Structure formats: structure tokens, C-alpha cells
Length: 379
Image 1 (cartoon, helix red, strand yellow):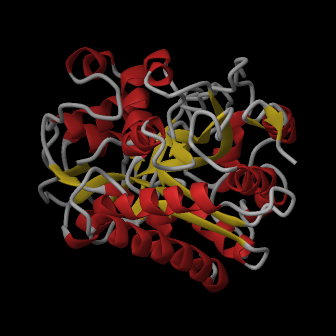
Image 2: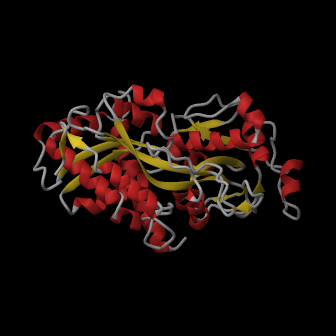
Image 3: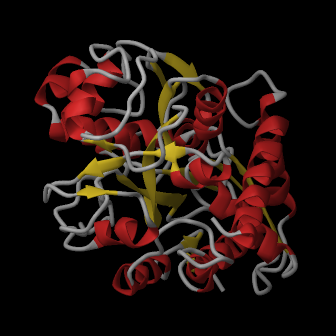
């Protein structure tokens, strides 16, 4: 990773962690500080024509570096964006209670999720991020080949050492130590967990029947870490560890990670082009609830999670926002699906996420045009 790009990722991650630290000082659910700020912005507001003011969000740790960088850029335009990376599940809960203006969520909203909201919610695809299978194994470089059944058995605890025959058979000529494997997983309600366990359920029926998929699952073995940053910290500190970590966090920590067998039978590294390939051929439903997991595209990395920004269709009526806050939210979303997409990609000045295909960004903007404040258009 180039130094300039490393600095961008590090700055975004540091900002995310700083916001999380502020929120975690409160004992109540997720982000009391964000909720309080939301109430303040809703009551005072600002000119609906300027789109300035403060908006507050919570949720996805996968997407946190994106929102932190975008917030930094928009600060100079009079818009303050606060985002608390508490996990997708907690973010959805915050939106349902209308204590934030938007939620970051990696899985799409299920009917049961929508039923908990105070009114109709719009979900906007924002980007896609590779979920790496990262390991801390002295002498073994990135590119260790792993397939779905092998990864599943590692996370089930049935493959216990790195020189297990199943791993050795996939990597002839690679010297693998007898080091014990320490499994690291998320301890919080997580969209990254949803993506990872969805992939495992797709590629290994025994995982689907015994553990299943979801933002929270009953892990058969291992130790938990809160957020992508928490999992990354445990992997970094534990020789022999393996964990599922979003690519920005893996790069920031200098992790080695596996080449994963995709649906076409190729072993693929989580590069930006391979992550972007997961968008090819996907079905886009009317509510834009896409899935990029286990793409059928031949060049795609198979464990790619889409991430969404969820907001009330009428943030004033259902979310308690003022007209000024609604205008600020729309300004943020307009940037997200326009100029903000240029900050994502494989360049040295970009964050390591796959930007939206232009056709999908167009659908986001078409949906954004339906957002209103108390039934009236947001100017």
C-alpha cells in the first residue's frame, strides 16, 4: 500500500475510533452523544437552502472510514457529519428510535427491520468492501489459498492447526507451521458478520445447518472483538490468529490475508478490481437491497459486502428532523452518490472500497429525489 494511501486510511480509521470512543463513554445502548447532537440539530436547524448544519449517523464499522473522510471534506462546506461506528445492528436500532439521522448498515433491510421503523425508510447502496480472511502467521505471506469448506471448518474449530492436511493440500510447496489456530470473530451485531456467514452458508452446507447466517450468530469457537477494529487488534496481537476483517482495516494493520476460492473455481485476492467485479450481474430489486456476496462473476472476490446508508423517506415527519437538518442530510447524500464516489477505488488518494457502478449510483439519485420533509420537497 502506498504511503499516501496508507495515511488516508489511517486518518479515516483514527477519526472513526475517536468518535467511537466518545460514544462508548456512555453506558446506554450505542451513541448517546450522537443522539443528543441529533436532537439539537433537529430543534435548531438551519437554512434549508444552504444544506449546512449537523447530521448524525451510527452503524457499520466497515463503512466508517468512508463516512469519516466524507465528513472531513464537507466540513469546509458548512456541513458537520458525525458518525459512530457501533455496528450495523446498533445503527439500525438507533434509526428505529430516531436518535440519529441516518444508519450505516451492510446487510439490506429485511421486512422485519422495516417494521421496527417509525415510517418508510430508503436504503441507498454506498459502496462495496472486501471482507478479508486475515491471518497472523510468521513466515507465511499473503495469498495462502483457502476455499469455503476449509475456512468454515477453521471457524467451526474442527481444523485446529495451520499444518492441517486440508490447508496443506490447497497450498503445495508452502511451509506451514504446526501453530495452533486462534479464531477471532465479531462480538457485536455486525454487517461484516452477516456478509461473512452468508458466504460460509452458501459454500458449506454444514455451516448453514449448524451455525447459519446473520448479524449475530452462535460462534462454535474463538474469541470476540468489537467492531472491525476490535477483531483487527486481536489478530494483530495473537500469533496464529485468523479473523475476518474489512480490507481498509487489514491494510492499515499490514495484515497478510488469503486468496479465496470463488464460485468460478479461481483463487482470488481482495483487490479493488476483484471487489468491483462483485457488482457485475447482480440483481437490483426495487428497494435497492442488493447483495454482492458470492458473486457469479468469474473475476470476483467472493466475500464482498455491500454497504448501505439508511434514512427515513420523510426525516422530518418520522425522524423528528427540522427542515434544515433534512436539507443537510440531502446534501450529504447528494455528495455520497456523486463526487464522494470519486474518493473510493485503487488510487493512492482513494479509500480501498469499490465505488458504485454508474447505473446503480443513478438509481440512488432517483430514489433520493423522493425524499421529502413533512411531505414537501427538500430544497
